[in-house]
Amino acid sequence: MFYGEFKHSIDVKGRLILPSKFREVSKEYGIERFFLTRGLDKCIFMFSENEWRIQEQKFKNMPFTKQQARHFNRLFFSGAIDVIPDKQGRFIIPPYLKDYAHINKDTVVIGISNRIEIWDSKGWANFYDNSNSSFEKIAEDVLDL
Image (cartoon, rainbow, N blue to C red; front, side):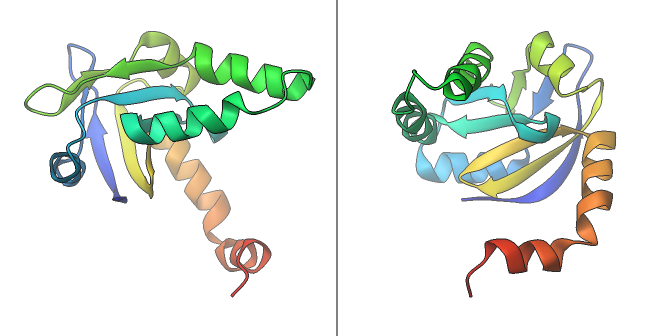
């Protein structure tokens, strides 16, 4: 559903614009509301409302008797906020999420099929540089082709 890599900047009012390709997909699928939360690797996860409900159910089924499950759920859900982009596709990222992802102004917004990730541009560049050379090895480890 969401694919690609797009560079955008936070505007003077603190808003980020959803890439036009993602706005087109959102319109096609009738997506109006998104959920933002702390992601992995210091990015922000952005889910459509439907995908959020799917993920929420998975995490709710984690046993609360497990300490790591409790910790994960606390950090994941306490960081969550719903947003509805305006007609131009702009939305505000709360300061605590920008702080978490070290986002100041320049971002990279990437589509990861069922979710969107929002990265600080330097953080994305570091991740990409450190991971790109091992892409084939990672593929061998995680894919069963």
